[in-house]
Image 1 (cartoon, rainbow, N blue to C red):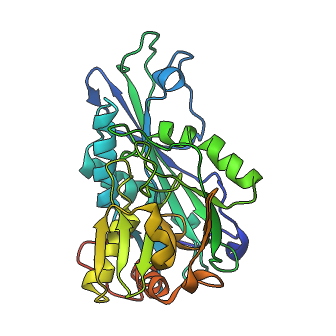
Image 2: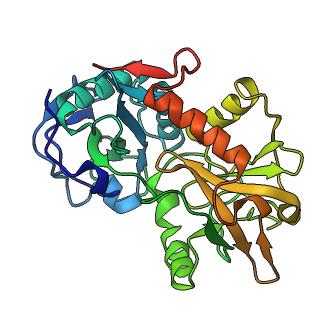
Length: 341
């Protein structure tokens, strides 16, 4: 299929309406058959559960065009599983995981002309989400829900390369102990917006959230997991029940240990340890890995020696490997790539 006539190198990381989206509705205790539709607009009751009590979960993944013209997705089964678990925690009927994967195939095939060409640096972002459509006025789960999957082509998250960013230690808490920090629900992101805007107003690129109970352990940012590299080259990722289990982070840790021979540790990380790390970064679907140059708190500024001007060597090696797998230049572990068309 011929690609859309866009300036792919300069489309930015923005929403564009594509041709089709997948929609399925839960009513009377079951999901309907689902279908691709043309209309990008959503019509719901004024008292829908999503509007009253923010009952919603979502995911994010990408599709890529390989050099041979085929279109693939990176580990969509992990997104299907995480969304299934998020829905259960929010008292929503989980969307079946196999149907989730079928929906990915359908919506990507229907929008194949929007999947950026190989070598453009752009990708097709896929956003599955589910929300309460049934009317509720008392605080309780809805009886009706809608699952949707939309797509939009996006350019590189960092135009001109991933430059090391400066982040601040937030005065706000991202998630409470035993709360919903470990699931991908819109409510977690809504409460982070004020902290995000405040950080930007003060000249910072992002926030570092500490654990809400003791404010001594590193958790994550509003939308990405942290990675650290010790002076002896060990890759460390913070562990907490309040951290979202990032698919990118889990993939990175596997690649580091099993493909690159890098020692890894997934453990609680005290903020006081940061001054001893050589490299730092953020990881997630959008940017894959973003290097962190400085972390600023009220008491001190921590600069990472191998990340002030560009991504440090250990994170760069990992970045090159995971993006190589996604682009088809490097063979990844079995089952990581789903061929769509």
